[in-house]
Image 1 (cartoon, helix red, strand yellow):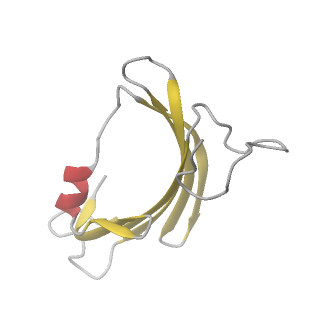
Image 2 (cartoon, one colour):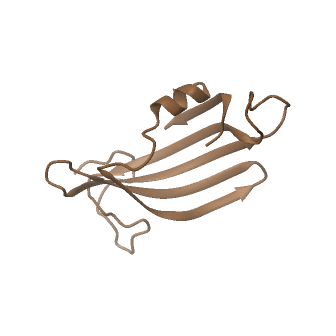
Length: 128
């Protein structure tokens, strides 16, 4: 992913990368031994904004059981201007990433469950 040198990333309203290099350094990058991504086809684009919703199932490294499901919403801003926004890289590039996610304490949770759905609070990081 081409990141602007001045790109910024927020996760649940906390800055987790204030430069393109910081974002790259803090990203897991590539496949994971314990994360399984799914339901990645929900993407919308409007002007220079990309919106996506996807799921990550998290596996316990010891037992091999899926123990949590992360529901992730991301907004990605892509810019080509002003000139030089992408540094020495070819425009366009990513200038902002905003992620909001909730983690359910159950593996393989449905992306959009049928009623009555999981019996839990609708807040993020909901416990058992």
